Structures are given as C-alpha cells and as structure tokens.
Length: 523
Image (cartoon, rainbow, N blue to C red; front, side):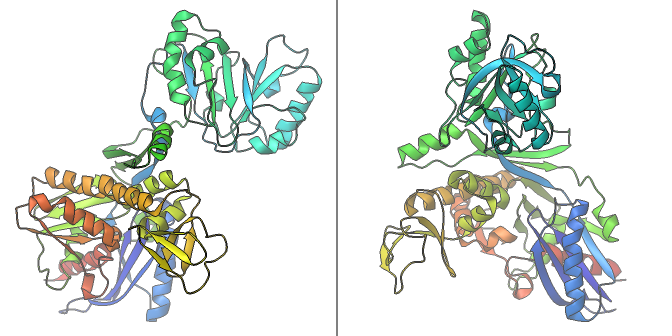
C-alpha cells in the first residue's frame, strides 16, 4: 500500500509518499511541497494537503491509502506595537489602537462620541466624533445629511476599512480613522480626541500629554495620567484617545481583543537596530514594534478528522526519525528542527519545542523594510545589491562589479534583492551593508537565541557533540553559519541534514512519520 506522511507546518506543507510492503523497509517514491493554506492545524489547511495528495496520486498512478499526521502545535507569529502588548496605567483615559495604515483626511479634533444613527433631530452645541459601523455608502450618506443639518462634526471613527471611500464621498475635510476593531466598545457620550497626520508624518497633538489633556478636558491629575496614553500613541500616523466616563478598575485597551488560549511558550524580540546609521536607528526605535511568536497547546479544529488521517506521533519524534536518514548521521543524538513557527530540539528521551523561528525572522525583516511579508520572505534569504548606475552594482561587502547588460527599469538607485531572475527592487533606502547587517542580526536574535534557549531547556549538549539541522530554515546558508558561530563557545559541531540523501534538510517530519508508522507494523 502507499502511505502519505503529511507535515503541516506554519509556512509549508510537505508530503512524503512511500510504498509499504511486508518484511521490507519503506520505499520512498515522492516528496511534494506547497504553501500551507490557512493556519496550521485548521480545517483550512486541509485544502493544501488535498491538493498535494491529488498531485501525488496523479504522478504515482494510484492514491495513498493511509494518511499519516503528527500531533500539531500551531504558532501565531506577527509584528505588534509595544503599546498593544504592555498594559500601563492610563488613568482616566483609554487608547483605541487603529489597525489601519490608510486613514483619510488630516487634522485633529475632540468631541463627544456619538453613533451615526444617533445624529437625528437638532444638532448639539458640543463638537462630535462620529462612530460608524455602516457600509461606506450608507456612512457617507449619513454624514452628508448630518453636516447639512448643522451637526458640528470634527472626526470619524470607522470599524471597517473604509476611511478613504468615506472621505471621497463627503464635502468636508475630516480626520477619519478606520479599522478600529474595538469601535463598538467605545463609550457613547464620552469625550474623545482623534488625529490623523499627513502621509509620512506622525501624530503630534495626541502624543503631547499636555495637549492631549486639554483636548480631553482633563484636570491636573488627569493630565499627569495622560502621559502614558500620549506615549502609547506616539509614532503612529493616526490615533484615538478616549476619556472614560468613570475611572476604570483596570487598564482599558479597546482594540483587537484576543480570546484566551493555552499558551505553551511565547517569544518576543524587537526590530534589529543598525550600529552605523543613527537616523535609521532612531526611526526603527520610534516605531516601537516587536515580533511576537506564541506557541499554543494544540489546533482548535480537527484536521486529522477532516482528512481521515492517523496521528502517528509528535513532530519532534518524526523529525528525529527523518533526520536519521541523512548519510553518515546514523542515530544523531541531537536534531534541531528549524521550521516556520517553532524550533524543536530533540534528544533521546525527550524534546523541547519553542516558539519563534523562520516566520518571526520574516516579520522582523518586513518591519525593517516596511514591505509586505511575501517580499520580506524573499529578502531574508537572498543577498542584496544597489544599482548605482545601469551598469555598476554595489554589493553588501562594499565591493562593486559591472553588469554586461543594463539594469532593468525601476531598479537603478534602489536596494534590490539579488535573485537569479534579476534584481528585485525594494522601497527601503538602505545601503546593502546596512541591510545585510540587519538581516543577519534578525536571524541571530531569533534563531540563534532560541537555539541557545532550547539547549538550556534540554539540560545542555555535551561538548564535542553533533547537532543535525533540519527544516526549511536550515536551507538558508546564513542561518547555518549564524548557528555555528553562536554555538562555537559550547564546542558543538553543526551539520545540515540531507533527508534520504537527496532532499537536503527538507522533509524530515514527513519522512519520519512514514518510518514511525512502518515501525508499528513490524511484528
């Protein structure tokens, strides 16, 4: 029969197809890979698995009769502003943190919070900050009507991603902040201050504690408490601060509520900072962003049930079995599986799983470059160049070479990823030397730091021992070099796995699932 060992990772899904015959070792036939669809362990991930199973059946001429899966532990990874994660004493005010990078309008306003549907009858004397939850067409129509009837509107807060659409449909320039997930929790009739800065600028009024206190009509004691709220919103292009109707019993952050989850490990790291570029260092510090990876106890949904799969073992156990197929490795006593979400250190008798790996490095790179995650994924793996002229190439080591053909349009004068298909331009105005330094620092801050953390949790690794690296991150030569350097003081040898002698460090878990299952069939 043909079996399929399925490794659903946080970034990549891999399937190893093998034929099992009685009395023989598994005959591996095919190893396929695709991007994971949906969150790891979710029902949405089944789509990617089914696609690979179908492709495998087409190439092999018959489907897999048994699907093998590991016990999955998902990781949530992303970038957050420090103000969203750290609770501080905000006194009589609360901060509603918008998720939008595209607010509309420019300016600052303060007034009473009112729902759009409440703007009926004669207008109030006090200024109004409107909260809308309607479709942008209905919201714009309601705002136009309220303005025509004389309502003194000074700002708009929208739950949806509609700021620009609303602004284009009203005839008054108002600061409009959208994607405020906690808009429904904002207290009606409470006084609120709203600010949108011009593109490329940061809020100034709400980031000044005295100015914020005046806007919210706070007394002297409240003004002192507003300093933390001002600090929490500084660095953003838009912000909202609300005066509580009465002092809260606990700090209130009215945005992005998170349901309780069973957290097994959490790892946070700030954006990497350059040594020799003071202006860039200041800009990155002002962003107050950090990458966060959180390992949870298990998937919320039954992926195994949806696929009709058999859960064979945990992921580290499978990785150890798959890594052992590396020529010359034998029964490697220590295997480090560096995936997208976790770093797993497996040794005989136990394993350590920690949050924070390749995905977290990608998020840090995206934060530094201010680019989409998909582009940051490419930027973290390849060296960079800058095209100084159509023919002169500036490299990360400071050297310069000459192209035989002119550089593609749109690449000259820009930092680019040096890919085999040609230079891929980035919007960041960094020298290649600076970006190379930050890219490697991100890998040290995440992968090397977590490797050392895993070794400590495991009780150490004997001096002179071999650690075998598997997983997608182990394909990155820079990651391997950084780990080797980071473990040099421990006198630990680092080698890259080559699963089945032909797949490099990829596929260890998928292959290991087949081997572990085959072992259960032997008498």
